[in-house]
Image (cartoon, rainbow, N blue to C red; front, top):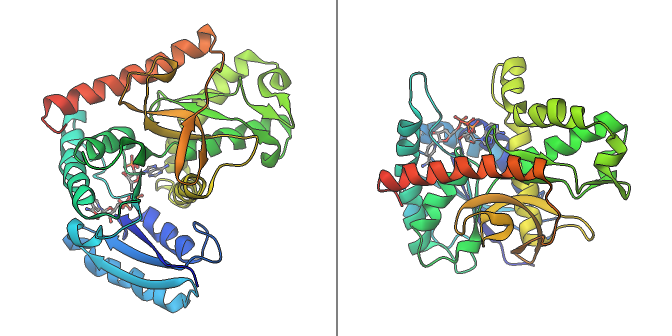
Length: 328
Ligand code: NDP
């Protein structure tokens, strides 16, 4: 049978982890033929809760789940990992300034970047879900000089999926009819969900919608503020959908995006579309065998240009803030 893949997950006792681990163990990430070894990292006070999660994983008797290891030392948990899903992050608490948030997460992601650098397998791929995801990925990348920059990404797939869902609801199309959706920039309220290149059953989505006001005043803010709407309704932040998007992103990265389509991923910029080199910014990408390539040659009109520039400017600010803090 196939060699097991070692998948490390941080923040494994959290809300997203509670959905994510069971789906990975069920084979939703690597498919029905690949056994999985889970390596679960938590902060020390959460280890007891994590033991409970492991008891539940055991009780599912998942045929593909080869082993589970837990701990609070990144060097041990990341040892030999092929894929690392960095979900755990320090949430913004009441009265916390943005600088405090970046600093608290900086401590986590510098340490994890170094641990990945020193201990992960040569084929390691790293996906960051924990917020502020793009800048956390930038910090980890910068602290892992021996790992190629292309191996780091931050999650914008949930935004991508939300955008597909909103467009399907507006047009009566099925989600499977919608292709070539793009999220540009930062996974934050400044993100730009772009339907000008998207297609609905092969027809240009913006033309099918035919309503620029809906795009600007309804679609874009609905997608960008969806997280807040879910907190408002559910009394807790989105977790199952964030886990599902984390799986979609990692699966497509490793196994490939669909023919004739692309996905959104925040990756290290090569300067494409005027995004400064090295920033972790979301682009349309095609993926194959663990590699990604930014889709080239898309026409960017003035409306889209301004939206992309605004989100990228925020990423530059975040980068400057963590540079000043000495984190990168
Ligand atoms: P969640 O599991 O709900 O969220 C984890 C992270 O994912 C947060 O940073 C959250 O950002 C982010 N996230 C990204 N996209 C989304 C989305 N669409 N919806 C919701 N969240 C999103 O948080 P919990 O507090 O339940 O769990 C976090 C766990 O991480 C805790 O168990 C904690 O102990 C652990 N942790 C582990 C560390 C480690 O392993 N070294 C370090 C730090 C924490 P946002 O805050 O913006 O919602």
